[in-house]
Image (cartoon, rainbow, N blue to C red; front, top):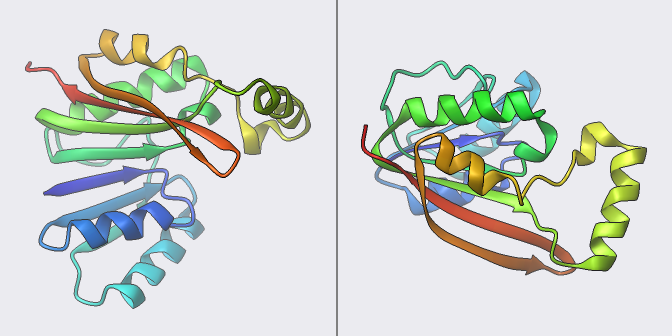
Length: 172
């Protein structure tokens, strides 16, 4: 498979994707050139000889041809984007995904009252880091941008609630 991770950050998910996609190509992008370079360096050390590449790129304007990926993974990016930027990113995701390609998004979930209260405080203190909760809006946005939702479930990592939405690019 040819897999794209958008907003690779420290590279934790990128490493997992390389591990499960050993015979394919795994590409990562991050807005920060430093994060992209650091993740690339760590991936080369952990997986020598793998077909894995990281680039500095903007999710709202991806530097890839149309229909060039089988799957896209995106973890905790949409919380940091404005409504317009979310739309632009979804348009780009749809553009670079092949027909029936899969988009997996991981979002901060709004399922725990205590977590929601803490999260609201954190978003006021450090909005650039914490962003805002968007998980109730995203399914509607996905379907309006040519995706069909195939899976939707909540998970919890210690006390941190997340929502995983899997969608496929509808046929054009």
